Length: 594
Ligand code: PEP
Ligand code: MG
Image (tube, rainbow, N blue to C red):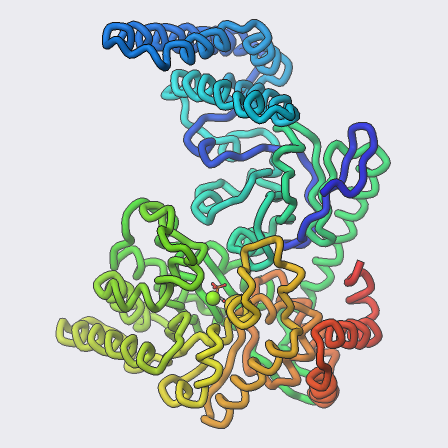
């Protein structure tokens, strides 16, 4: 949706999923790009050589096409001959080649990058053509570009984020965990994507890397080209393309303001989350990569409440070995500043797939063979991870957490396999902890209903609201068209959470929450009123949540919760909670409902 437009400047509205403001140049990412070299030439004297390299690749491409044509003729295959003619014509087209050469000369970039910009240009022209046949002919240009790129490759394999001079803002249709995992994030300033929702893993990764991000922009990839100036405002969910000077100044100011406020919050990082009437909540951090641990500590994490270990699988082409697992877990659990580390066994499937299992064949992967279901089927893969977790437990306090539990049978089966691996290691004389707390993620409505039964099987619960909301409200968490329905304050969701905490406390076990709701400042008092024992969130959220908790009382939180639970509709609850929080913390929430 184009929210506002001047001559060259236009604004798009999406969903702000990672706060902050990023200002920079667009880099239109295509998953294919990860295999191609993009870099700025070291100095202008290299330009003539780069132009020659491009021309050589054109000649090679033409020769290859002529060769293919010759072979086809020999084999008396006539059908694709004219298509190859078209491709040769594109290769020789002066506008096509001169535009690329102009980019190399003017921007001092390598031929691959320039060619990619030319392709973007053609894509935009073709997409504007109403005739479906003609607009689909952009695939011919694409084909030619691929061939030339292939001929250019093999000289230097670097990505823009590895050698680029300045940072870029990645604009893409979507970013899979595998895409983001292979990016060198210090060259990236922010993200803007066509699809995705608040709890899609792209959003989670952006937040964990402290990069402003806006998702669900519908078709930003059609509206921008590599090199365009762009502002990503992850707080308000707005993206500005080619801002006019005054607008740019305003956003630079906003960025300064945001960065200063973030530093101000950091003052609360090391303080305990203790209410004015002495109710203490343990604050954990959610991580995907061990590289995030220093950030977690700086922002005030007291433990790791959720280590999403599936990213170990997504990173690579082959399954991680027991040693790969162990080396990662040991680094987490030995961190002296953390009271414990909760290692969640891998949750593959849903919207997270390893490289070697890119596309799920399931019609509905979110409800498919994911998480614990997958583990209980692929027992050997699962046991490899379980052994590594046990081995790590010898080095620091470790808790294990099983995702997507929906029955007592599942948790018993998981525990049985855990015990088998324990016995196996003990019989081999391997050092492991004498005990390890076992937790179940409560993220399926069935688990809430049988929470009293599950509580007898485990040492703690951790509520995964991202999935619990998805499954209870029947909303695909990654579907940007449904975000308006994704409501943590829905009365059904509040009742589900309350039941879990109550059942856990009745059984004298602790309950944590590790879904995104735990880090949502608007929900802080509601969750406090529920008497959750631990909130685990992305590190950026920690100082602000601590500040709010420290300025509240458990008494007022319970009254607020009771009132919230008395409403019939989600919008009534939201309106009441927003009003309360804005009145109570005017500095915190002044821009909340913009
Ligand atoms: C959740 O579902 O809330 C959760 C924390 O797990 P994930 O986001 O990894 O599915
Ligand atoms: Mg989940």
